[in-house]
Image (tube, rainbow over the protein chains, first blue to last red):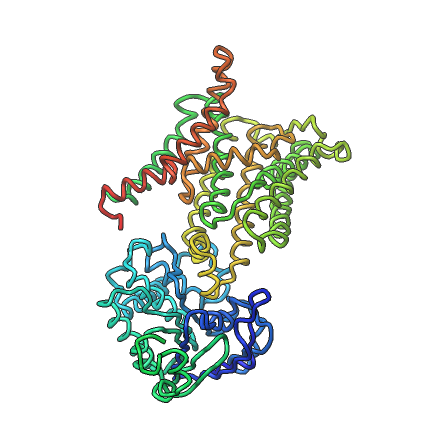
Length: 251
Length: 323
C-alpha cells in the first residue's frame, strides 16, 4: 500500500508552491514534513488528499494513479487526513461525527434511505471514541468541546475511516501544554500499531523526534533534505536555513 | 418527562385533535382550512429537508408542488374524474418529479449554493409561464386554471379530509425515518461542514441529489393533496410567492426540526385566512403580508431556531439534557 509522489508540482495561480517533489511512503513508516511557514507543507498534503490539483507529476496509491481522483474517492481508498484548523461538525455530537466516518466505509448507503443507523456502527464509533479518550464526551457537540478534545475528535474520525495513509496536519496545534502528552501518546500508539503510513506536518521538533522515522525538509516548495531525523537535523544546510546553526525549538 | 416524551406526546395530541376536528367542528370551513394546512405542512417539511437538513436553499421548490397539482389535475380532468385517472396522475406526477429533480440536480447541485438557488428560481418561473401559456391551453386551460373533478369516492368532504390527513401522517413518518437514517445523518453532516463530509469519503453530490429527489417527491405529493383538497389548480401553484410562503413557514416553525413545518403551515395558512376575513371589516388586514414580514424579522432575530426549535431547546435545558 505505498503512496508515491512523482515530480509533483502545485501552483496557486501564477505562483508555483510545490516544485518537483517526489516521495514514497510505506505502511508502518512515519515521515515528518518540516519547514518554515509558507514552505508548502500543507499544500503538499492538499495535493495528496486531492484538495489541490497538480500542475505536473503523479500521485499513486497502491499502484493506482489517483492524480485526477476527487477528495472523496481518495478518502474511500484509504487516504485519510486531518486538518490544521479545526474542521468538524459544530452541532453534531462526537458520537454522531465518528459514526459518520464509520458510515463512510459502508458504500453508497442508498439502500438505507429509511432504515436506522445500525447498532454495530454506533458501537464501533464508541470504540474509536474510547481509543482517543473521548468516551465521556460522546454526547457533547463539537462546538461545546475544548480545543484539545476537538483535536482528538479529528483523530477519532480519521481512525474510524480505517485509512492506510494518515495525513496529519499539525495534530497538536493550539493544544494546551497539558493536553499535548495525551495526544502524543495516542499518536505513538497509532504508530506502534504499524497499520498506517503516516505523513505528519509538524512545527514542534520534539514531536517529530518522538514520532517520525524519516524527516523531509521543505524549503520554498522543494525538498532541501531528507533522511532520519538525526541526520537531517545535523545537516548544515538545514541548520543554516532554519535552525540558526543549532537544534532549536522550531522547524 | 424527557424532551422525547414531550415530542411524542405533543404529536399524538395533535393527531388526535386532527382526527376529531370533523366530529367536534363539523365538515366545511375548519376541515377545508386544515386540508390546505396538511398540504402546505408537507410542502414545508419537504423544504426543511433541503434547507434545514442539507443546507441547500431553493427558491423554486414550488416547481414540484405545482407539478404535483398540475399533473394530477390534468389526469383527473381528462379522465372525467375517474379513480384510474387519479392513480395515473399520481404515478406520472411522481415520475416527472424524480426526472425533474435529477435534471435540476445534475445541472446545478455541483455549483455554489447561491447559483443553485437562482437556477431553481428560474426553473420554477419557467413552469409558471408554461402552465399559463396559450400553447398548452388544451392541457392546462392556460391562465384560467382548471376545475378538477374527483372520483365519486372522494366527493365527500369528510373522506377528502381523512385521506389528506392519512397521507400527511404516512409522509411525516417516512420523512422521520429518512432524517434518522444513515443518509439523513450524512445530510446533516453536509449542512454542518460539506468539506469535512467530502474528506470522510462521502460523495456529497450524490447525497444532495438524493435529498433533492426525496424533497421533490414530498413536495409533489403535497401538490397532489392540494389539488384534491381545492379541486382547482391554476398557475398560482408555480408562483415564486408559494416558495417564499413555504420558506416563511419553515423558518417560523423551525429550520432543521422537521415538525416545524407543521406548525408554520398552521400559523401562516390560519393567519392568512383570518386576516382575509377581517379585511372585510378592517381593510388594514388586507395588507397582512407586512405583518408576516415583521413576524419573519422577529423570529429570525429572537428565535433563530423557530418556534419548535426554541421550545425543544428550552425543554432540553429544563430536563438537563443540553450539552
